[in-house]
Length: 232
Image (cartoon, rainbow, N blue to C red; front, side, top):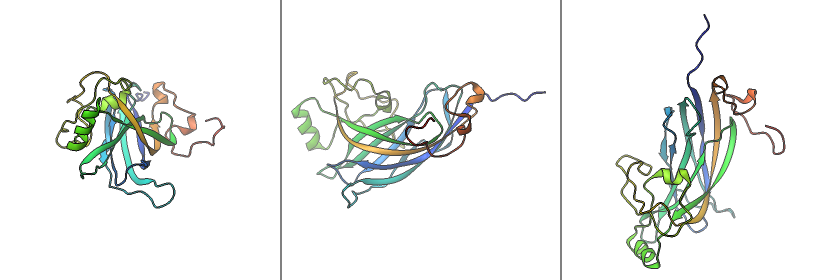
């Protein structure tokens, strides 16, 4: 009697939040969490984490190096809602308050192997000079509370609203998925900084379920990406 085929596939991700470039800021730390569809479920590892505080390197790059590890495994029945990693970078302002210095998100790479991603970061902006001064003086900068806002990448071109800072749910490193402080669907934002991540991606049983994410010999095998210009 033939054995039953797999009903789910696995996505195994490890790597690190490697470094960042924020020319105007120093002494920063990073939080990460994963956002994924309702058909996905974590089976091992950590979905969220918080790094150490790091200072700029003394060389010409002035890089902020964390080398903070990522290690998580997901299972799913279909690729819809493929996981994204959402990053939030924080640091002190002139009054010593922790304020957000950047948000960013990127999908976990779809093909197995080793990948490097550089993510542009952004922050919500107040809508008027008075609000900017008040938030600066009070140490209450605009801050998202819903990571889906960052992961979806929608509603960030207008200039008619802002996100207010709201306390996060106790015990959560990432903004709440339920408490939303957006005053309208569009948020004014400003780009600042970049964060570099390294991913090692392994998939299992995707081909058996009819999904093709790469050549057969890379399914479930860790290894370096091919040199630029060569076929994957």
